[in-house]
Length: 351
Image 1 (cartoon, helix red, strand yellow):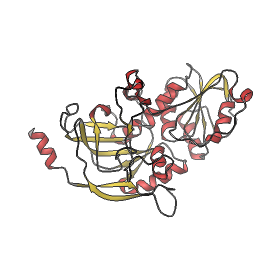
Image 2 (tube, helix red, strand yellow):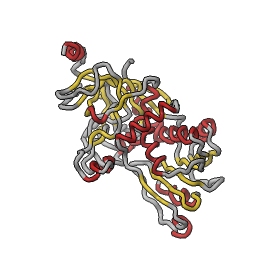
Image 3 (tube, helix red, strand yellow):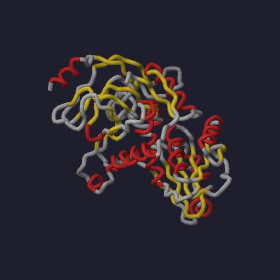
Image 4 (cartoon, rainbow, N blue to C red):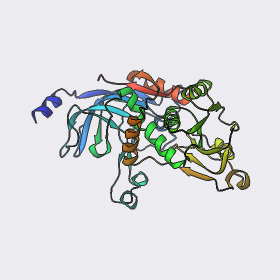
């Protein structure tokens, strides 16, 4: 109790945080997010208060800021790839010790009692809540999280490296699983930002032949540097037929070409939460020969735990570009234009 009181005494009453004002283009005349001063949140029953150390900048943050996703909380603070230090626990909260470093992901809460939760598919819970969309996220100095939905961070991962693993990594891993990549198979990755390059690390480490499709010339070079067998434009014909493909770019126009690049029996997994309309498909050319088209919705906590263990074992260290908290809007612009090497990460606090 004395330790808790000491930590609470050192917590300020206010903090710096970004919030979405009016959703719109991040590179428009007026940015849709602004820096404000707001009260430090108080942890409720079963919740932990975290001092944010780093927060990854995800494409979903861009969807929230630009209005591709409907508003779930007015003036929400984006950010859901959060690494931070536990500084206080709410009532009936015992999982993490003060001073412990933990990670806060996209999935914030599920009901635990619906048919999906009870069958191990909590990612499909119709009542689920999400960090940085339904509740304030990590573009801030402090954030709360229900203790059951946070992760312990492997010790050898520094806080900048660990941040992108909490969404880009976890979602990439679930998409990789959904894509049914055969052992020694050929995998196409469409779009090559934070999530795709982590997925490439995992695939290449397991002997998968990876082919990159992206508009960014620097991203193409980056893919080849990581060990991809080829790198070409987003709409190009694949140099080989692909057993599986994962689409990270939110551009529905790309889907017909991706299906055409698949081998017989191949699977295309759509990894994003948002996608523009898919054009009409020709059954014989795009779907026949038992090709599979599937989406990916969030993740389960088991996905997260499994992936972080795998990332630790394989020593996955994503490439990152750090930004100060004050430059979150600039980082979002970089993510929008797509030609980045790895993942953008906000440095918020000191370890």
